[in-house]
Length: 227
Ligand code: FE
Image (cartoon, rainbow, N blue to C red; front, side, top):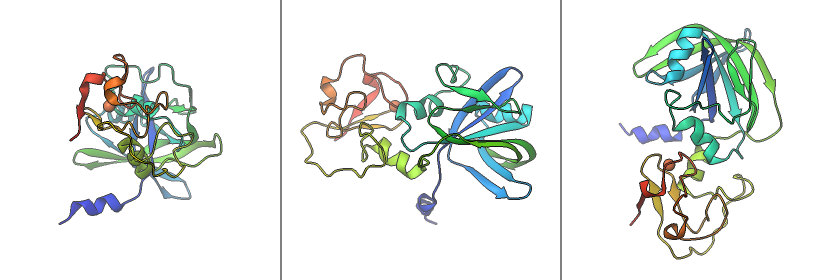
């Protein structure tokens, strides 16, 4: 069995959110999908170890925020590589509460939908929550982020410093300088693509000492040099 066949499945990238009492939390997930039309039902698949799973089980509600393809990597990292147990992921993030009380993100978001759970399916490491949609809105026009596109940006094959992630990567002569990989999140810094914060094509070694991973926020010394 070649499990890399799974890489040919296409996905989006979403922030799945929920609440528990007066607490709110959210996480990045690529598995959110519509199941039926009338009534409209949607489903999300959430790892059992994640705080969001616990929140959805408790409250029976969740919301899905559909990310824009131009969403900065750091914003994805805020929800993707940190645990709500350690940090308030919503600090400095624009959001609103839906009718269910679940939050939805209004920043970098094209649309949201919120649902009340009607069924939970145990799927080993994950729980699939099926919900009846009770609210939804388009927030603005744009191209939804796909998981594939996000992976390309993260690998550095699309420059995050470019005005839009969607623009085709220009095949430029690679400038001198080694690439470095973040040991935590896998983000690759490639000097040829430039520093995502400034756009400057400078070698990793010359980045300032307080430079942090644009995705997960770890310090520079967490990066490993690639051969
Ligand atoms: Fe990182």
